[in-house]
Length: 213
Image (cartoon, rainbow, N blue to C red; front, top):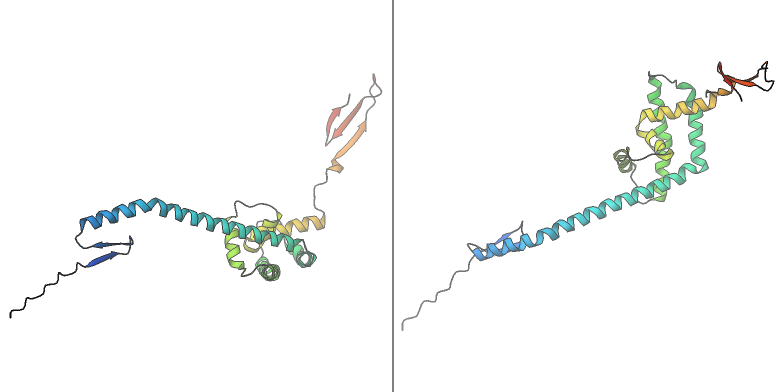
């Protein structure tokens, strides 16, 4: 009795294209066409998805940054911060001079300021915000430096920008020593009797005479 040899058709190997997330048969033109059709069809959806993710991430970062700024506003208005900052300014304002030359001691004073003021601010923020990172926040602050204005941002920039720090000390020194321009000493009122009209009055301001009506 002759037995017929069984013949099994070999399976066509399947190839997975991981970059396109499609499965196709090797040497199968229809599979390739299907693959191209699917990927081209989904490209706009994928691009839109990525844009949405990027927008959400950016919006989340902006919201967190605003939250941190709000907390800092509260902290710097509180009495403990005011006492610490004013104590530091009172201690060192006499060391600073309004010249382009910077003394060597300025660097040490700035480092001490960062240690005292920034450390206090960081400790307070960590009490109010979970997982707060001062280094990450400082980086965001530098990235937005040109967009921000106001007293609170000037205070924050004193940690990373020495010239802003120096300007703060000089402003405090000017306020303490009263070195503001006083124009009252330059203003005098002189009554001048005119031969024809007794009521003529001229005002002399810095040597310039302005005749009244």
